[in-house]
Length: 256
Length: 215
Image (cartoon, rainbow over all chains, first blue to last red; front, side, top):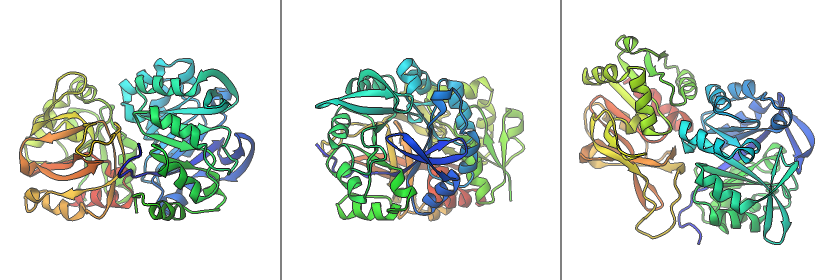
């Protein structure tokens, strides 16, 4: 059943490595694009509804280099900012909120220690706790959860983990299709339909949007709430207004 | 311009709020002890997370009597998100918990049942337009803010609980979430409460904060 007056958010997703905005294909082969806060500023001016920053090396090296980047961004943009990568504890959450993040996303540490979701939700509220689920297709209608930025398969079923994460207090699910990420080949409709049908909290679909119509397909045909877009914006193949006007033409209400 | 005191009690995204006010040229002071609050004429009470967690922290830091004195002295007060919800008598989040009770009414979970029988997810997250309530128009104190609380604009909401004011005229604006009506702005005299986050609502939110601070 699709929503009568769903009002999707168009979210720009920025993957960060050290001080730089980067983009890769299927989270491998990284290209350096430049200063993330310059991109963030541009998206804010263009009317982006929200920003997601992901530190792509944090969980691999056990460090979090995002603080300076987040602080610089939060001074200039006044829309919600979700930050993830290497968040392992409530202290990590606190330090990100203290430099201007509004929400945090957790992946690897939450898979290893699901109670982390509950601890974050109880301390900072569910609205602050976004659980990122990186999904890779294993067989027909079956996806496994990956951790360590798409490198490590866990054997956990994506739909089971979605329900468990929500039960434990996730306020939103950021669903990344590793198969589609950076490919520009369109969203994995089967995946996002399956996850958004079991989720009782908002689901943000990420991975695969190569043209504005891919965002339309994701939002019109599924219960997904919002769409996160990375390289289509970074490489200026379409602007935020392009996406919004496509969504509007498709009959969806958007923030003007 | 008068300095705006921001209650710093370990809840709410203080950094975002300070940034937003700085950006529009409103001087702010983080107030971390109840004794300091008396030095200021206007304050913002932020708050995110659980209602009871926020009230507990305010009690722990002994802010409750100082805030009561401040509001009862008629000083201008803005509550944001859970900071708005705490202006009411009680909440039913994690059992019953007492709030300040400046405004009669209570706080309850956003209803997942609506008139059109379609699914409503909670938390409610997203940008919404608001509708100004006629009963609130022309009231002293808040009416000037209303001029800036523009129904054409959209504001960013992120919450699972919402306020149910008992007095009709305390409800300043509502928003519609898939057929569920949610109190978006409440207030009376020196009190204003916003369920949405003006500090995260782009230029519309910044304009509203500036207008309130300059009243």
